Image (cartoon, rainbow, N blue to C red; front, side, top):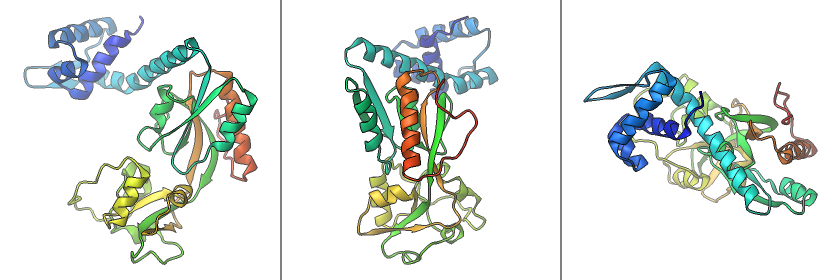
Length: 303
């Protein structure tokens, strides 16, 4: 049986909203039409996806499994559509995504010099979208910082770098050569804790609920503004902290915090020879600058 991607998109909308009316409005279709499509999808899959009554809509175990697998599948289909459209409209393109603090000029020049007919572009990503940009085909390859959702991706480790805490210029720890994570236990972390999983394991971290909701910060610039205003602290890779310098904040190495791993990522179903070639370029460049190249089984270039 082939999966109907249109019905799969309808299912994802209902699964995320857990409300047929809101999902129908989001999809710009009538609610009865959506209900019929979901019932038809359940019939095709021979599985009940929702338990629904007049008051609630709840995912079944089969529904939860389908939701977990739907994202990479839809992203892969979107990436395929983008690649086909680019191929059909003239000049071939190659787009490199990068996280703040990572400079990709040398690699972009190298692939462009090897292929003068190729239009090489770059796109800046963030913690929230670094994997999605590659999965969905908005970029052919992406420099990502771990941890990252690896579903639908292949990764090649490139290098590691220390992490630092960014503090207001007059903070009590600002003049220290380095700090331990335990010294930051009482500080307010401004970023998603998933970006600094070690933060959760701090033994002396306050367990009381956060009196103020953590702000939604999508850029390094926003994070630094909040740090400068004494709203909290952030943990950043050293290269990012150095790139975004400003006079009212400082960064201090965190001695017992593991290094940040930078990898090159590409969609696992992208078999383009250009991707294979760029993986080699990126690995060579990382080696040339003296960065460590951790080994990883199955993490080499696409075959």
